Length: 292
Image: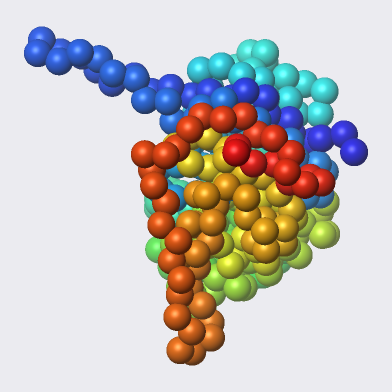
């Protein structure tokens, strides 16, 4: 199947400032990352904090400008687009942010927040936009009568539903879900995840799902890529990755998963960071690639 998103040799470097008594330095947050996502897929991206997951997701949407590499959406190389062309392309490429408390403007009514993408892209008349906002509120399980309220009047789970309504307002085909439930109470995480899966089925969405909750990734993702120090060290179908990890870092990461069985002792597998090597991915089984 032809990929919807095809990322090739993506690199993002951040340059530290230099001063009178210090030299500038460069941090390579994303280091030669390649992967492809097919239509309708939920592709997981996991790794410890600072591994480059979020930077990769934002580079794919060009919210952070990549240093080098190609990002193809259908037949278009997003890196070749002008700012105006990229703005138009973002109708099809959206993001759900991690923190529902900081991603919504506290001075705007929630109806205006959800309507804003429609206004920016000049979609419909004022009455048509308001009707669309009411439709979106109902779609994500909120009362359309609440569109005049402010973000502070909603719970964290409700705010994330508002952020999701904003993300799907323009009927995108690809959504980056950047830790979409990590800031929520455990009691409402399952509700938001089920909503994401329901919307995927109803609207034909494709997700890049960035998370650190490995049990959640195993539940919702079709394939998973593991990142370490800005590089992908393993890619495999979700069940295969969790049952037969090949890279030593993946094994160490999975060994840290909490168990649901009372009294079961965890067998932690240590990872020697000094042993890390920049190796190319190679196929170790059908559809299973590891940098070993």
